[in-house]
Image 1 (cartoon, helix red, strand yellow):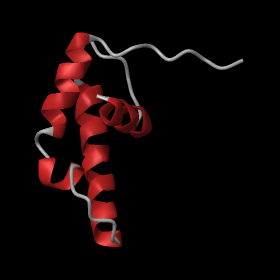
Image 2 (cartoon, one colour):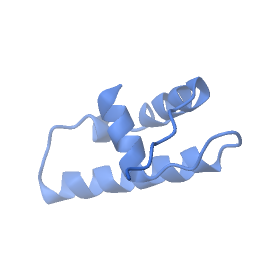
Image 3 (cartoon, one colour):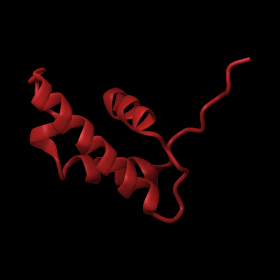
Image 4 (tube, one colour):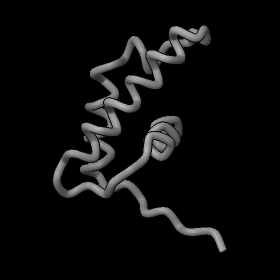
Length: 72
């Protein structure tokens, strides 16, 4: 049985948007070389850490945050 994921709240959506905007040149880059991929990975880890440090948000993984961002 597949677990249903909890939806992102408005607060979580706005928080994610703000955190991603701190790294636009990295997150939105179309580069696919190893350096760019490493930079993206590091940026998403920082976003995850900062996202999960806020009160009133459900803990999310990098995978969940990236997937949600992709679908925004």
